Length: 226
Image 1: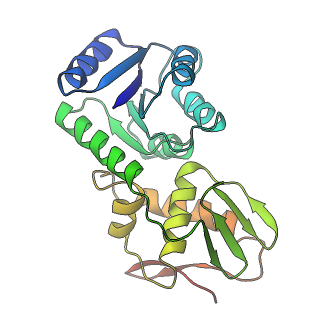
Image 2: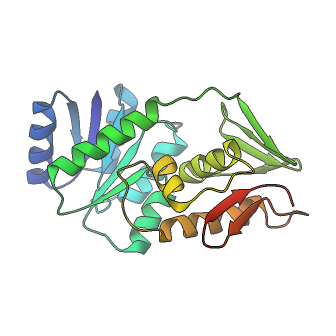
């Protein structure tokens, strides 16, 4: 497995690279965003570990750029000292798949890498297009369309919408969503789910004739036609 590490602290790079190499991972290291993007486009990369505070182009900008370059399916793990809920939400919203706050235990880092790898390799075959009411989601192009209007989604919003649509008319608890959208090792509380549900509702429901995403008080969320 090839991992791209974008981190400006040399001691952190040396520590992570040594530990991952000992476990059989191949690690490409970059100390700034532009170099990291260059390595990504020139090599076969299976996962990216990305710091937010970088010289010049910050990690949020790098993450957004990675997704815009078309690397939609490459998992991105944010690794940073910025651990507030707002910073975590911004990181996930920029396209990251998971978030680990410094200082961290190396065992947790490798567990999250394994979880992201498992999620990447899971490919349930339930058809290339999901539909409910006038909402369609193409799983090949990652494009959502409702009533003929294209809906632009971040990578996290896409995964959340896909999971809701695959399980439409079924109540999904916060535990279900944390495990299946963010990965079983993701542990930051439930606020991030509420934040992303609000994001998704603004894109999927706002301005349309009927709501598709519903809150079931005390239980979770359900996607269904009114």
